Image (cartoon, rainbow, N blue to C red; front, side):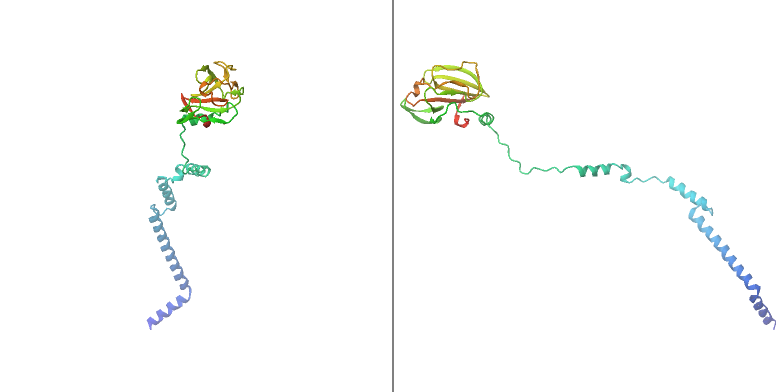
Length: 248
């Protein structure tokens, strides 16, 4: 009977104010447990006990002690941008494919390309230049070479210098008659033979293309059987050359 009365009283207590007292004690116990649990976790994480401010301060100090890591851009911030700008503005270099080979010119070709020589007299070529093939000479009655051009022209036709130069010789040759020689420089000379006795120039005179040197005559004994003509020669570095390769 006594045990039943105790249980009855405990039930009345729980139904009254005792219920709220028990509830308060439970809540308090939970709050105290949570506080200590939170304090313990904070201290373990920060390494500075239960003081949150100290934990934050410690983390800041640790961050200051860490060396600053520099990225490639931080080390030279303007280098990469300058390289990009140069790559955009630089024009691509075009590589010449299969360049044309440079032709080596001989002294003869160089002179011909740089200097234009005019015909000393107007007329047809009566006899060609020939140093390798013998041709029959009607005057001498034999076969021989010919180191110039015979240009057909009437007696008294004016004979002009083929280019700019200086008169270096005025002479009478036993075979080719009256001759005027003009030096054009760079090893080139021109020679005008079978002229009339009277000429218009003398040694040392400067002449130009078209300057009248004399007139067509009959003084060349070795070519007296040929019709009236001018015997014209061109010499380069003391070697006779074909005037047809240089006259224009």
